[in-house]
Length: 301
Image (cartoon, rainbow, N blue to C red; front, side, top):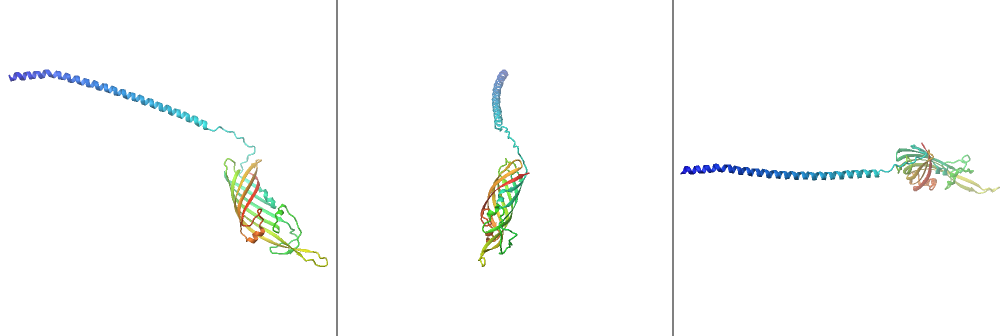
């Protein structure tokens, strides 16, 4: 009986194995199909994302190209048009100027300067001056550095004698000056246009004063005579200051340089001597602020 039951159980198991295997294979195929469909859907989403990224990249590249074209167009518009500047007939880019200060003739003298450019916007100017005024006859008067008596005959000199003041009958002096000039505008050639120029100078003068004393008339003719006493005063001084001027050029080789300046006179002699030699404004020797001006005509080379 037991053997019959065991045989029935084995037969049942054998018959059920093919059915289970078939069911398992069916489930596996269903799973594979589902995974394949999901993979296809994922690939479709990835392709759609790629297409979207491609469109965005194309849009960005298009905007960049448009910006570059607009920038190039703007740059072309910003470039100034070529301006044709007419060339002046007279042009000379020399770096040296020999000048003559015309105002110095007012005191019967000579003031010569030499200007040399040292860069595109600066130069050095060295000048020397000499002046002489006389209102007496040196051949008939003996003048010393101490009072002396003599008679004199007047001998008018040049226009500078108009400035013989304070009892002076003669004046003689020299001056040497060094100046640095800085030109303010680069568009002008060398040594042209507006400039500022600090300067320092040394000068010396010898002045002769006269004091006329009448001598009482004596018989028999009762003629009044005069005695002239002459004294010489020697003075020295330095000066520092600042000029502002403008230098023009014309006729190719000529320049014109009007200027005005202010400075400080520093006398190196005693106050009394400086007082005798001093000519206010024109040739000061007192320790005082002074104003000066001039017009220099120059030759450019």
